[in-house]
Length: 146
Image (cartoon, one colour):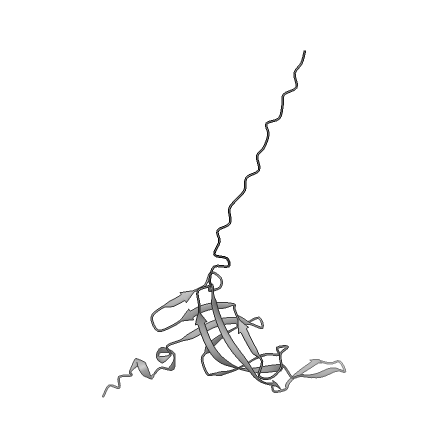
């Protein structure tokens, strides 16, 4: 018996819209209506945050890759809560010496939910065209030798 797998069962192929963005020195795969834990942001709960460093954006029909970032792409996030990650232990020991050091660390995190991913065209900043004005330069007069 052969068991054929349908590609629509794979969670990455079934998604219509996702983006890969850079935040907190890391790259994340963002999808709409999902929660993500990123490094602590200086924002209060229920605040809206916009990410503009989008490296890749995929919608229903196309994939857009940035050089290095995609222009006019935005991800709207909402801060859900602030929390702390699990404690990690660091134990340093030097053999045959009485040197031991035990330290712990808990990373501060912010839980965010993705509200929307968009690729919008920016409107022109001003409708009036700017005219360039050239300054007239006078030719330097030659010194006459009499």
